[in-house]
Length: 218
Image 1 (cartoon, one colour):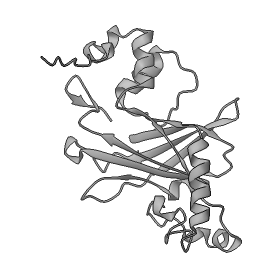
Image 2: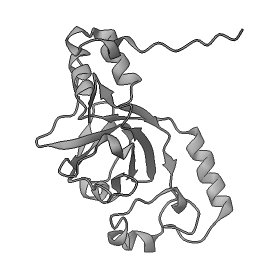
Image 3: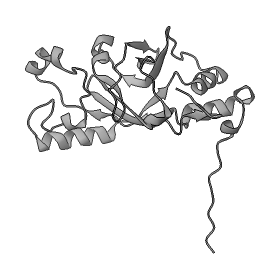
C-alpha cells in the first residue's frame, strides 16, 4: 500500500485576518503566493555607444534574458561573455519580491510591525523588489524597463516607480501599475519583469493561488 501525505495548508490560510498572530504574519511575508524570491540575471556592462543610445532602450518592451550575450539588446552572441554572466549570476543572492498591494500582505506587514513598509497614494497594483544593492538609477530609468505581462493581452506599464533607501544601504524599488487595466483570475499567470541597472528580474505570479477566503487579492 502506498500512502500519500498531503501538505497541510499554512495556518494563516484558514483564519480570518483579525485572528492572525505574529507568526502567521511572518509566514505570509516569507512564503505565500504574493511573495517570491528572484534570482536576478547580471546583464553585461554597456559600451559607451549603448549608453548614448540609452534613450531608445526599453521602448515599452522588457529586455528579457535573450539580451544576455545573444542577438538581443547587447549585440552579437559572445559565448565566453555569456558564461561569465551566468557564473556571476549564480553567485548572487536572491531578491525578495512582494505583491505589496495585496490585502493579506498589507495586513501581515501591519501585524508583524514591519518598519519601512512601502506606502503610496492612488489605486495601483504595487510590486516591490527588496534589498537591491548599490542602486544609482533614477525612477524614470527604472520605469521604462518594467512590465506586467499576460498571455493574449497588452502589457501593463508602471505609472510610477518609487525608490526607498534604507539605513542599511539597500533599496526597495516599488513599481506602481495602474489598476485601470484589470487583472482577473482568467489571466492565470502574471509575469513581472524589471531591469534594475544591470540586474534583470523575472517572476511569475499565479492568480489561481493569489486568493484569500475566495477572493482574488492583488
